[in-house]
Length: 266
Image (cartoon, rainbow, N blue to C red; front, side):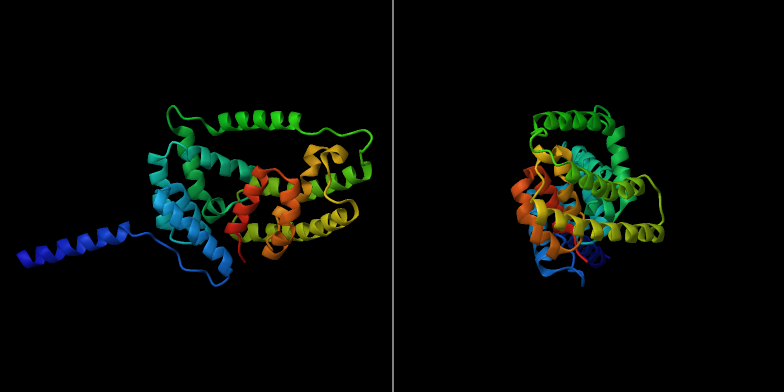
């Protein structure tokens, strides 16, 4: 009897040790080596810092264990005071049509933690976050260069306005719909076709005018090339146009761009 108890205790201790070992998902067959290496590096750093949210984010990016993602999100919710703000950041990004890996990995799981954050006592709600975000955005806009009457380009403004509509309208519509996966894939094909057409239009604009400046088209429309290129799934396209984006876009946008690149693969 004593020997059996010793064996059982040994097995429990072994399981406990395994549970504490860092988990690294295997590389998916369709994931480029450079993206896998980047995510693994980020994941190792997250384990070293015991950053549970980052662990969940990069395991999700690598399409790893659902249990590991859920467990680390729960740990982050219970121990990290900045967790809910990170969740709000992701939801806000989704509201703007950018669906990052953790959101795409399991939207229902993500939404459950969004609800938990909203319901937490003495915690800023997502509605409060949006008000503050919009206030900051308006302040940033006021600080940006305004259209110069001597440099304004009305034909380019009209073209960028049409491209922005094609880039954003369907994404905003999909974000408010509760679709089955097969229906979402059908809608996504339509968006992918629009994205390809928009990319060709942006190529023509860059060739003819260079990168649009706020002085000639306004601050909001000057970001349209960023949105179109950011929505491209081709790593080759993203790498090709990253230098011109970095030269003309602020650091916050480039952080979003690089984060999606790290989690994107086909």
